[in-house]
Structure formats: C-alpha cells, structure tokens
Image (tube, rainbow, N blue to C red; front, side, top):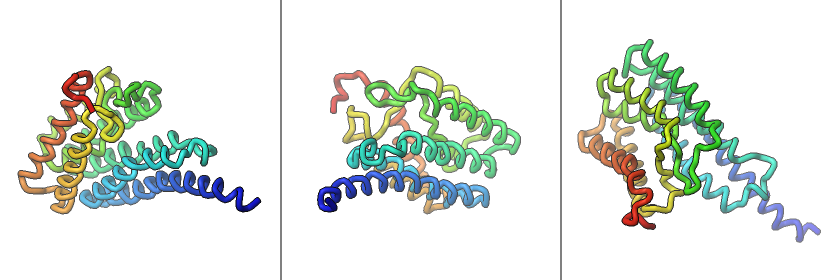
Length: 238
C-alpha cells in the first residue's frame, strides 16, 4: 500500500512545493516594502528583481508539476495574483511616494490612482488574450518606477507616464508575456536576460549607472514596446 501511494505523495509534495515557492514572493515583497519605507531604493529593487524572477519561472514549474491536479486545494492563479499585486503595485507605489522623484502630494495621489486602477485590472477576466498576450498595460509598475529611478525625467513627465500607463490598462492594445508568447520567443528571452543584466548593474550602481546602461535599458524597453506591432506579422514566426 505504501509503495503504491509513494508516487502520488511525491507528486503532491512537488505540487505544494511550487505553491510554496510562489508564496515566498510574499516574503520578498515584505522585504522590498521595508527597504522602500527606509528609502533604501537599490535594495528595494533588488528584492523586486528577485520577485520578478520567481514570478517568471513559477508558472513553468506549476505546469510541470501539474499543480491543478497534485495540489488542487490551492488556487495557483489567485495566489499568483496576490503576490503580483504586492510586488508589481504596492511596493513600487510606496517606493515612489518615499522618493524624491516628484512632490509628495503628486506621488501620493498618483499612487492612489495607480492602486485603484491596478486592483480593477487584476480582477479583469479579459487580462490575457487567447495567444497569451496581456490585454492593456499589465500593471508592471515595478518596471515603470524602476525606470523613473534610473532615468530621472522631470517630475511632470514622470506623472504623465504614470497616469498614461494607468489609462492604458483599459485599452485594447497588447503587451507581450516574455516567456509564454510564441512569436519571437528566443529573441524575447535573450532580450529579457539582457534586461536583467542591465538592471542588476543599475542596482549595484545604486540606481545611478553609467549612461550606456541607461541607453541599454531604453533599447530593451523599446524592443518590448514595439513587439505588439509584430504580433500578426509573418516576419515574426517562432
């Protein structure tokens, strides 16, 4: 009996381990939040980078472990959304508010708008298209605020970018999921790795990296922002 049960037990352990791995992003979010409150912004984004890495691979692990069967008592989608809201929305909003990127009142009110809009977006059942693109700006405020810290545009421009991105969450435009969209997947993964390397350098340099790092981050961002134009192009197969 115990021998027959063992493969099932291993599968269940693997499934729950993946959920535990996803849930660990919550602890990372707390560490990032503490760093943001203390104005240790490079450390904050280092933790957010780790959270982004966890979020990037936990879906693949969940599918490999078949968590919907082996650990069905935990809804992995809900768990993922809870962690994402902390790391993609709440922590970046607090980092923005605690920073000197814009006047306190502006960052406070914009932060409230971003949080409310993001809560609605995360609950939208149309968030992803059938071919796994995000419909509307995918509320990746961790990335937007990171760019504001590194590039430091005038605060008015920062405010326009933030409010504009909040509006884009509810438009029919699409944004790529770097790991799941099939088109140009190899190049997109390579660009994602390059982005992580550039971001790591920026964090090590206390968010004040050499100019070439800033330009590299701009180029990689431009690549991802231009991908929707190639979504249906015959030139962008595989």
